[in-house]
Image 1 (tube, helix red, strand yellow):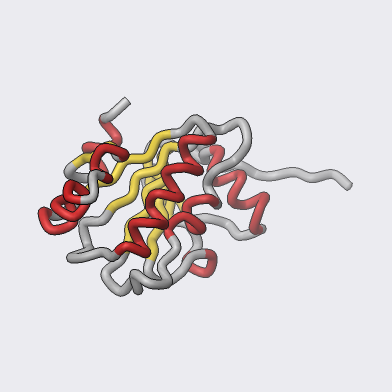
Image 2 (cartoon, one colour):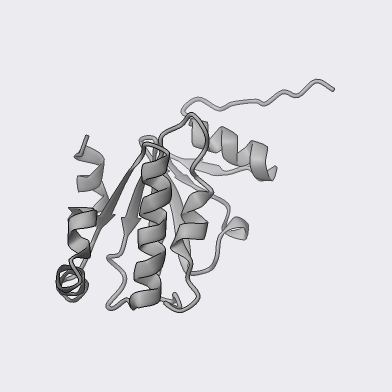
Length: 151
């Protein structure tokens, strides 16, 4: 069986791996890839910008069942160090369950020699991270665009 893929200009490794893994095409919008909403929970928007996966956590998430680690693991592939940005700008609060999932995602990313950045963290969530000393585990940026500038 001959397997072939037609690749549009600007298509990334993540687009190709996503298609090979799921058979679902992703749509490309000016370098900002929006993955199929059929593939992700309704509380998460997944984009790719400049080779980095951006996980936008939407305000309708349930912190008890929202497993960001499970969603993020989909973008960790052998031989490709992941670069994941978790955008929390639409959230007002998080709980210990969500924190546990963030820590698990960090562990998966680091095992794959990748990088994870949290962005859009409001003062309430930042204070929680500081009180629990979890702020020392993560790199922070104000906005996803700022995270892209980090090496």
